[in-house]
Image (tube, rainbow, N blue to C red):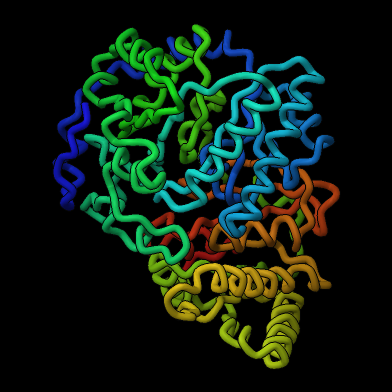
Length: 484
């Protein structure tokens, strides 16, 4: 089925209210039976730290050395994450990193005689280095391991963030409406922009026509909800030449049904690469549901210090959430003029000012929000790589706030993918963290490792594009034990 369908906004209730119900417990039972025999280590490469937003009790490694991969392979858990932060990389850096990662995975897999699956976890609004990342992984693994990938699964569904795929069109929920992804602000991203919402056409667009919409295999909601496991398995068995498989989904049960068929196909010898949002990782990793985290679970050691909130993301939702946060009466706000990055001496003075003020507030028991100036730095047309490099300098400056802190905050919240990655790896110096769960739907929490700058700290990774207008405010109120 390659129906393009309408790409107009649609009411959520009109779309989701007319989908056939299914026996979810029966599906879960079937899935458990299939997962028992999967016997593959699942390695999730996360292009920013928000990909753990559906899991708990899972390790995240912040490098891809052979030593870290050996630890991951030796864990009892079927799955572990590697934080690549590649959404903040140039194309050349991304290619180099993914080549290294793939080669190291193969080395460790051979050494431990263990089969594996690689999932490239990308943004649920379709931004990122695609198809570069999965192509490099495919080519490197095929060359070094002597296998051949039959296809690539495209599954950007992410319920917690309101991302649904219906009739092969990917939607982003905005209040009561589903907006085709290609018509959102995310599609206008200066580095990773696109125009197509139909995922077959999106693949064709992103691959410059190398992979066609007409050659894409589409797993429909109708087939999933009718539990046509054999039909879906047969569709997967027919995939060749690294052609793409688009999975429609509006609920976790759709992913569960698909994974049942997927495992059957893999047991028959099919090899797939994966580009997905966070929902697939939870399902194929067999991760159980867990209630949202409470303050007592998050803050193990009370201090007299305030917390620290760092806001770097510039998407519209983040700015709206920041404005809502400003209505509190227990937080100090510091604007960081990141546009001074164009004037090095003034930029250094601005960083020093922000760090000194932040530290004084935290030490006095005040929770502080440091936020970057809201206007994007625009160098004009044809300057994407230059803008990306400047954004890295700005992110380094925000990270230095944590690096140079001499006082331990009660907690840290980082808003935005690149921001949260750099703060976790460079600021907090985390090598391995454990995902505690989520404080709000789609908002994960790391507990930092013993090796980190602040061991055992709750580090809240708040994606730029997740939550309602009030969700950041509500999150900080939980952490501060302070409800207005």
